[in-house]
Length: 508
Image 1 (tube, rainbow, N blue to C red):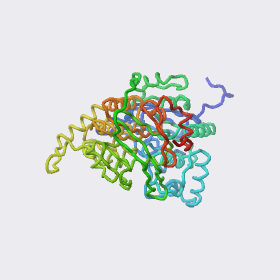
Image 2: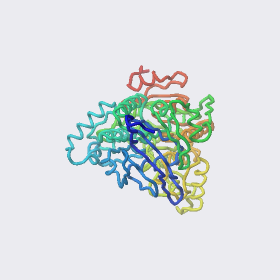
Image 3: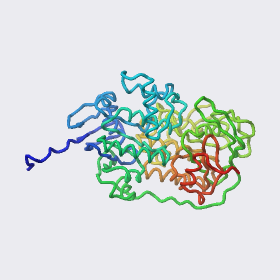
Image 4: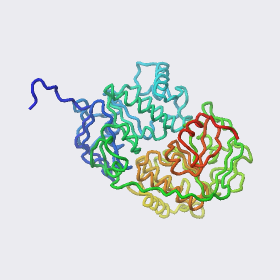
């Protein structure tokens, strides 16, 4: 019995009871209960396709539940849309960004803040928040000129400008550097100390253990457990999430072969006012090795990828050589015929067409289903997609599922699998495990190592240093449009790479 002098029990910031959401091919959420207290940083953990993003979209009003109740600050609410959620004090950073490419950063943020502020006021507030949180961004830049990492900064700043009572973050650090992650964690702890509740979705178990004070685990749309992650290990959290320990990678040293891709003094001016000039890029990528490229997003990685893939064909003659062929001005299709395959960092829109099925998306880079006269063998096309789905454990309704219907991690598995399965001679992959759970991440990395062991030359561009240390035989750093000298993985350290990210390396 509670005495008259006892304080009243604290009202939970968010309380979900029996939340259910069904789709034709899957039950995304099955009678889920979740409670988040005021000032709590609450992790939501689960495999790709476990129902995490769907549940968060229900809280944010972007998806309507089929059953269940949502309570916010002790009051039952029906959140009919994101605007109502923002009015209640709920902000969300989506894993797949919701930005208009043709508008500036300030204009995108202004759309969600109401009419009481001028565009100039919003630009000023963006600069203040960006500086305070270490997420620098130019408010006047058009979004289409931003890298994935820079777009993520915009999403985080936009959410913070709403002064939320509940902040939902879906994979917020997937393309942030370690220093930016530290700064973000400082901000989140400050927000929690001020009473803001945070729901934090991440597949990086060490982040959850370092940041979060509570954790709910989902598997196949159901809650399978809760815990205090500070008292768990990465291994125990992994077992709760996928039912087993993730497979251990086997990185066996081997002698690299001849150069499969050579870049010599590649100097290309930026294609837009906010881009980065490439200055004297010089490297070799050998048969049977993985070369890792580290660096802060926005330092020329996007421009380098465009030149290597054939999207930007302004490279001077003789600067890019693929398997002894000068491909500096060659198209992407011509490079693919020579054995180069490419995984872009943007999944939807470049890696896959959102409104097309997985079967049709195989045709973006694979020609096996295309017969003489350019007839498409639909049976072979669906069989190819089905094989990729099975081999890479893509959680989906089948080959006819639309790309946009997949969770981010499952779509990433499909796209990476599509290119690995093509048995390329050279593979260029950007952010290979962005937003992918620990089990699938280990699977993708193991597949890249197996490809390297089979003689493929692999170039990996990633902002996750742990990933590069696991995969790379050699590492380089990109900073301000220039590329550092290469170093063997055995000589690389976080401190040295961090120094080189500022462009501080000795020219050779």
